[in-house]
Image (cartoon, rainbow, N blue to C red; front, side, top):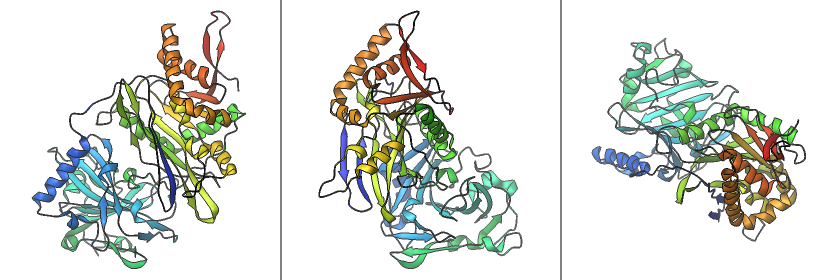
Length: 501
């Protein structure tokens, strides 16, 4: 296992990357790196158009940089590429909340019918500081990098209800032909005047400026549509333009925040209710489905582990955002690692948010591994130095009261809470040796006739049953139950049993 920690001056004070190895994995090896292939397609289109990278900024009033290293493949034919602003660029919501545009820019790459990649720059502009409970409310602007297609779609509670676009838009003509208002143009009565927003104003390095405008070349050809807009792009399986499911520029910003309740290390029956409540939350459910689909569906990530962390505000329990989805990679010998980002940010008014609730997939039938138990330990055990300020003793205890480790497999979903923090910290230096013991115990139980996932559950509880509580639920369902092992009176063998709640 690799532990890599690095210090970053500015808002984020500390980030740790925690690698997680597994026992048995049938991982895919690609002859060609899909990220490189995608970037090569992008570069080829730049060359064909006679363009330079400097010509490809989202706007002439601020500079941007494509984060190729953080590409997220949603399917084999769809990728989301975050975009960073190189200046401070902010826009304000209707309720006067400043939004860092750095978190709301992406490139969406999809393959067309010919199998060619098409690239669209997308800007997400929420109308309010928090989404409505039903979903995204605001505008999504999509503009082709190498064609003249453009659309501005208004959303209310996750449903698109109005759009302005160029009438010869190939994205929409192929999918919405029957829905276009023929002859519609800006100023036409069939377009609502209040929706004719052609310019987005914001602040670049604290100076009022234009951060986007409707391209002048398409204005004479603009059309509009106030019928409900299909989120799946009509007949197209994946729309090439931006949709709410792409929102966040890859950093998982969420609108209306789920609120987490604290765990009680001495009350697993109360904890199962909180675990089930978190699992049922629509934002968390969508994120869990995302990493499961990446692991199980056809695409470059099939057969690989995927994971993410939730940021939790320790002052109020708000789950404020999600980290990037990280992809596992083979380390040889049938093992696999997937990084876990462990970080804390100091917020205004002496508040702090910490990465907690590490969630990841296993692409095989198993329980959590010994190394999974230590996911999230770094914010708890880190000590302050002259270069960094860690959480206080009180904050560390609050953090642990919110933290859980979640593993989704093909036969069960699991969660772990820490019941003895002192033992958790003291056992951490022996983690590599414990992983070897875990493998030996797993093989012993498997040879005794236990199935794979029960063998791993028993091995885990043998090692760490005195410092963790293990919970198990059906796949995709919010029915966690705390489990222990006990001796069957008839067979005198160990069995996994629910705690009587």
